[in-house]
Amino acid sequence: MVKDSKGRLAAGYQRHMFICGHERSTDANRPCCYTRDSLALMKRLKIAAKEEGLSNVRVQKSGCLDFCENGISCVVYPEGVWYTLTGEENIPALIEHLRSGTIAEHLRMNMED
Ligand code: FES
Image 1 (tube, rainbow, N blue to C red):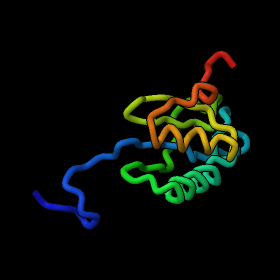
Image 2: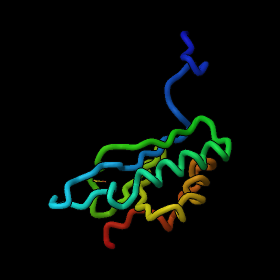
Image 3: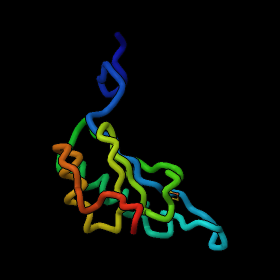
């Protein structure tokens, strides 16, 4: 088996977090996560994960996850948990999810809101 440049023998991560970075024009019919500062939050979260020494996890930007009215949209695998993020105050709970798999119940996307 061939290792990649990081020495890995198999593809995948223990946890994989996607945060929507999609941007729409101001006259679009739906809101977008970009205007809620999703990319700034994603960058801060990546830094926090690195500072915490989390390995085998990945935090990355996604395109539109199609739950735009409930954004900032975020999904974490393998749990398949969907979150509505609001800002940097969410970072500790998200880091804990990445570390231990503990779901941040207070951040779950609630379609009834
Ligand atoms: S713009 Fe973020 S979910 Fe659609």
